[in-house]
Image 1 (cartoon, one colour):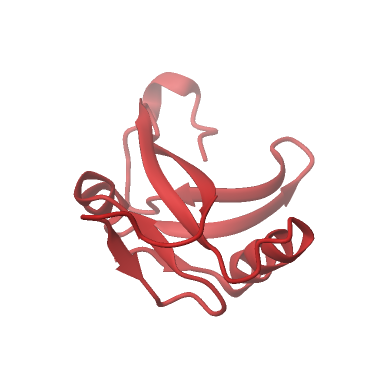
Image 2 (cartoon, helix red, strand yellow):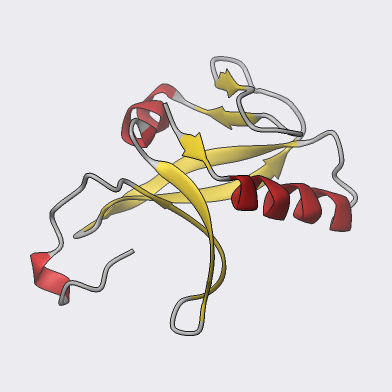
Length: 108
């Protein structure tokens, strides 16, 4: 199951409010793989599509994803970052993934 930090929840709730999407959730989808593991995308979504999983563990919104994404999200964490090198926003990462030797060790 994906974990979400309190800072990430606040960031998403603020985004929903700023974009007039209060009541919407977040669609999380698998967008590929890299040396640091699976890569994900996110978008606003009003409700679950047929066959999607609904995760209501976040405070203030739901998360929607398909079975393939659910499997890739297992053990991942959604975190808010504010880093001068990587910018400000959200990251989804698997803190247990150890496959980053080819990119110099600085993967997120």
